[in-house]
Image (tube, rainbow over the protein chains, first blue to last red):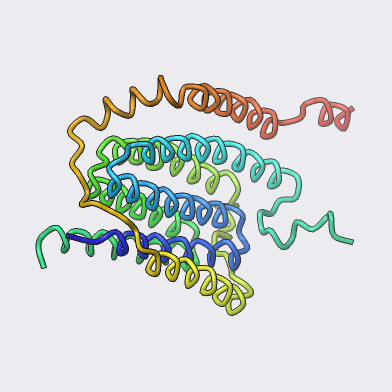
Length: 100
Length: 172
């Protein structure tokens, strides 16, 4: 039987890979995918706790996280499309009109 | 090593390798497609943890919804005719250090804590239990999730639509 720790370490590694992606990539869509990776890592933690504690509240939290992730995907891609329409780029380092 | 362990390591390998490809691939389409394998791997781990409902919802929402939306975003924002799909990375070393610190902290917390756990039980009626929780104990949150989805839908349509007024003025 796999102990709880292995699932938690897997999700920590998964989360760290997501952090590297958010910090290093320039393309807004890839940053967006990495945010989804991090949300999935958190979901994995919640489900493993839920399973090992025998309490299905964790799975309900995962359900709500998925609802928020879907909303975030819609709004984020709308922002990216609006950005592309106005500036013809989605590289985040070229979008610096707030910088002076 | 039993079959159960072997399946866990297989899915863990799929998740980590494909997540790394998402982060490291030069071509954005490769990233999008390896995100697919990551989502399927996570769904497999959910099945292994006796969360069948969440695994199915993961496949439907993430693979069927969010991934398709992301691929639409890729298609709408990259100049496909000019083959400018390649993307670069920057500040690699500092970000690896930062994520190493965060990941190391998480692993230390997870391994040092003495979790009082039982063996993972096979709940025979996960869907029934989740459904009962959703309409009793977490009912307000359930309604709020519906409102959030509605607001996000309206907001994204508002953000992404073309502003017709300005273009007409410019044409005049």
